Figure (tube, rainbow, N blue to C red):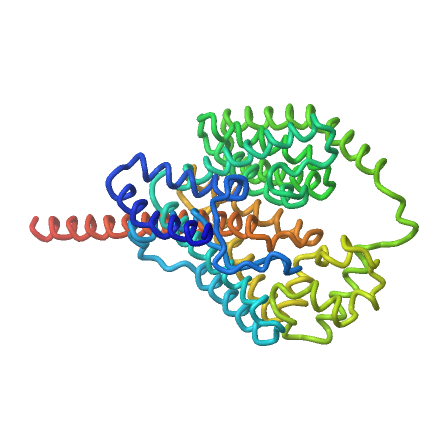
Length: 447
């Protein structure tokens, strides 16, 4: 009964959102803000509902869900016109979706595998919605404002966890590694908005909240890659052009590093002091042996969302030397690329890499497009975010969780939207120049 009520609420919310978005500019801006905020609050506020629920399925997607974010995204698609320029990223996204659907043909049971393409399809809807929003003036800034508020929300819960003695804070996301990967999207985007000259308080809160969340996760990969991302973003931003504001932002970043580094060091020190001795067992290496063997035996993959089941039922974990504990046998290989290769094969991995690198290249091209507008700074932030996330995927599998899939779609949507707006502006300028040239020629002929 509760499921029916939840589905009814999501369904009826679409026409309500459409009416609000058509009639009120403030409602439009708030909906854009909500898109960025929602990945950080959906679970905590129970803003989703299951069409199909496999609660005990050991894969990373446990059913076919819909959320209030999906409803808002659909309403945005209905009320905002598409841009005339088709995005390469969208075609790459659809190619990746097709590859995951192909992997379902090799899955057993197939239903457990179809859940991931369903999740990916929802992410694509959010991507298209954000692309249309970001093609509007200041649209991307409202979305990033939501990301900033979302990571500040998670930072608040992380501080509360630390005060209660938790060494590795996870906010409301359930695991420190998931929070750690999520911080990259909000932290780097917020800093990029600050570097673009935006003096509002939300980006500052996003940067501060992102740094707090990173430090309190107690994750080496998160801390190191966040620092790398900030340094890379600042260097590339200064190469684009320098301003006095940028130098002040750099000073703020240095101050946060000076304050945060000792806390991060103490967190890591406390974490490793409390960890049990490994006795020579390298679990990460054991997982990777199992995944490589699975991929070698199944070049087309065993089906999305199937790794844990196949690793255990067909002896891959046993032969690779993975310990027989629920924590070890019930999780995925800690490498997104190996996990994709084992589950969706070479086809799926190539499709994903096509999507990732097209996003990075288009974001970089937009960042260095002329004239170098403040929106180019946001594109640069998206590019650096995607690079950092790509590196982090070498150490984590949680990229495939729905939270990160939403955040990834939002970042790609910002990239595609800004790129489309740049193309539209160039088209308008060329057309104006052509009209002016024709008018001058006409005047000369009359003279």
